[in-house]
Amino acid sequence: MPRRRTESNLKPKAFYPELTYVLLEQDSELYKTAYIIVKKEKGIYVVMKREQATQSQKLMVFVLTMSLYGLATLFTELIPKFQVGIVEFSVEYFLFIPLVLGMLFDPLSAALGAATGELVFSEIMLGQFGGLGEVEKFITVTIGIYVAGRLVRNPKNQKMVGIAAMLGVIVQQFLGTMVDILKVQFAIEDFEAVEGLPEAVAVTEGFAFLNDVLFSGILFCLLPTLFLVPRLYGKIEPLLGMQPRTENTALSAIGVKTAIVCVIAFLGAIAAEFLAESGFELVSWEADWAESTGAMAVGMLIAAVAAVVVLVIMKKNAERAQMQK
Amino acid sequence: MEKTMKKLSENILDKLSLDFLRNQVLKNAYGNDDTVIAKLDPRVLIVWYLFFGLVPWFSGNVLFLAGCFILVAATTILARVAGLVLFLFLLGVFSQTGYLFLVSLLFGGNAETVIPLLVLTLKVATVSLASITVFSGLDPDRLSNGLMWFGCPEKLSFSISYAYRMLPMLMEEFQNVLLSYRLRGKAPESSGFIGKVKYLIYEVQIIVQAFYPLMLNTAKRSRTTVEALEIRGYRYAAANKKVKKMKLSSLKVTYDDMLFLAVSFLWMAIVFVVISYI
Image (cartoon, rainbow over all chains, first blue to last red):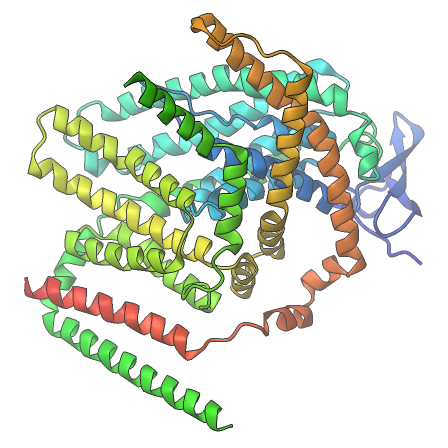
């Protein structure tokens, strides 16, 4: 007897009396879970069959996006960024990969996979891990891809694919810009001497945002997505044992709940960025502490020497004991 | 002169080939199992990293920062990190603060402008060297085990192990697909400004097109991977405490780990003594 699954967007009967769903078939744990949905629309009962990606398929999408986007970001990490005046040509060259996959498969898995891939391949593997600062990038990429993926209900609709691709880039870049501007606004003590600096930052950041959206957004996100989505549609899904996405099988439009979760995640991103690079003036605290406690420093030194000596002796003893055994 | 420049640019292009990248990444991941750093317990190293990755941000004392920097530089040497990673590190530090220094010199900067920049540079350099030591110096499997012990999501540690294993293969495949696309078409002349622009467009086009077969191939591979994982009960095991315990039983804090922490502590204590008596 296969275990009955309750997916998040299929609420128990009690909440929606008009919405009934029955587990129709389940090929195996790995593939295909189909539900029948009976829905009352304008007084008529409509029967729909809905297929859901299983957890394994979600993992497949995660692995797929992670490896491809990870590989791509590894290259971008190696391509030097160059600046012409204040215009920086540093673009998320390969954002089209998770965008395409998010439109064809489960958006959340694709979004998380992309963000993890970037973190693991280009940050951790190359030793570029920036600590908490990476959280901001992780969250903005996830939100951007997720929103774009949710928007496309029918990947055959070229117009919608284009709009979603641009919107994904805009959301991702906009959130990043917001964080940057807020960072300067709050860390303003450092810039007190400079009049009109916040405005200047807002202008340059806004310009960089427009530059990124218009330049990299169109060249590297919109065009490749429009090229790849129709080609891959219907071809790549069977490779993961799935049905292509259609109007009926797509997840419903973005609800209030999703939007709230996105906002909370964005606040988390801002908080992490602040913790990572804040101008919290702990400098003075540090200096006072170091000066007034010379005795404590000596104490620390003695403790450290003692610890090293004791550990060396203990290690020698342990080695000798092992030799005797 | 022209000849040497040509040779130099050829040399640099040579160095940046995909093969070179692959070798460097592989070397970084698996080439240094026998270093002092690689043998340490990942948990101890992560705790160590938390100190040297966070504390320098909150300090403005040049001596303290210099002390931290010397220590992490020493550990980076001990970890025998691949050249490419160090090059990227230098590039990163330069792009963050180095060019600011050059600009400030242009506008008549002096020793006073140098000190805040030095503080910033030391901060950035210390934090990145600490992360290089931990993330490049450790074996990927040990690193992911260490992260798992601290309660990081199972997916993250899986991703790390998977990424290190798969990356060489993925790179090779990408290179092959790219080459096969190149073989099929004729590259435009790259002389003159318009020619260069055309060539750039051609290259970008090829790269985007190459992702079409690559996506299909990778989809097949990820299905195989997940099926293999499921056969071994991966998703069940990921959530099971017993399995986690078994997986992490290989981690053991030895005297070497304690000694490593103690020596780091000793060095910082010396730095504090120096700071308080100068």
